[in-house]
Length: 161
Image 1 (cartoon, one colour):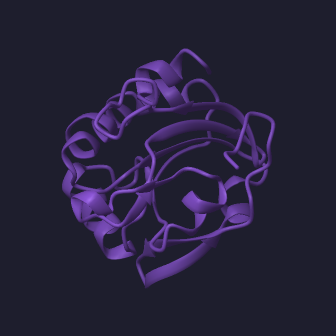
Image 2 (cartoon, helix red, strand yellow; image 1 turned 30 degrees about the vertical axis):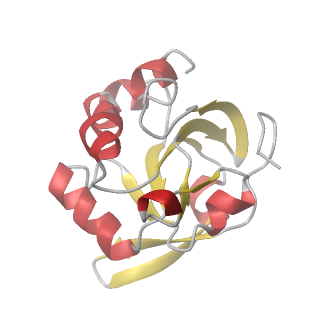
């Protein structure tokens, strides 16, 4: 079942890159007591994700945070090393937190996984954005197709803050 506005995020563990290497961060570590913008991409470095979706959040990061947002996070079904490389390649390191959902467990748990096997991608995450306050979803924007980043884009999300 797909997560809805008003639902609490399920317990999940992401992988993040630290100065000491990969580390685990739970849903509570990331969202408890915070107002967070979370957006998801089907895959780091894929065309729409790399050229459209992520850049919108990078370009609007200051405006988003000025609305009382504690953190902007992106998740994708990629390993922590790919997410780290993507953060560095895009200039996103230190601006956006890059969360690896390597096995797609979080995407599946919230009902937003995507079968990309027809394109050789396996199970991925659907493209979406959400506002999460103290672990509870207060806004949710799910794209109808993986090749678009409009409904889930930073400009649309800014109007919801």
